[in-house]
Image 1 (tube, rainbow, N blue to C red):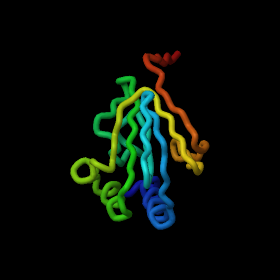
Image 2: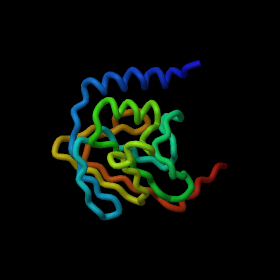
Image 3: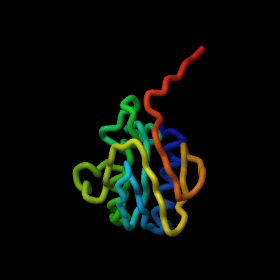
Image 4: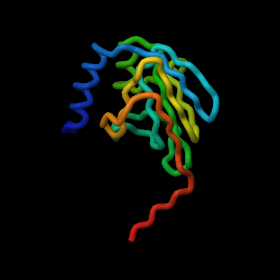
Amino acid sequence: MLKMEFVTFIIAYFKVLLDYQLSSLEVCVNGEFTTYNNVWFIIISNGPNYQGEFKVTTNANATNGELNMTIVHSINRFQLFMVIFFNMAEKHLSAVINTIACESISITSKKPSIIHADGKVVGETPVSISIRKFRVALIK
């Protein structure tokens, strides 16, 4: 049985696949700047899966105090399809899919890029993201 979230993702994916205009982003990870061209997307997470279904980072661990940035760039639409639906990133496209563990990330672009958090639009670039280490949640 397909989950409604998955069906919604598939529909949105094909719309984006047809309409999306690639961009260039300057990314600063732990103080080191890199420019990426023809960027499809960046996922920043502390867990290995996105939407519970799609593996986006192989070494992500929600308890290690690090963020993981996965950036997909410089591939064509067919390759993007293969990456997302057949999880072929690690085997075939490692040169254009970078995953980096870090504590802080800043992203800037010449043209504003939309930022999503948990499926909702929350702003646009520039953005800075960092993780709070050793934070303890208490439940009463």
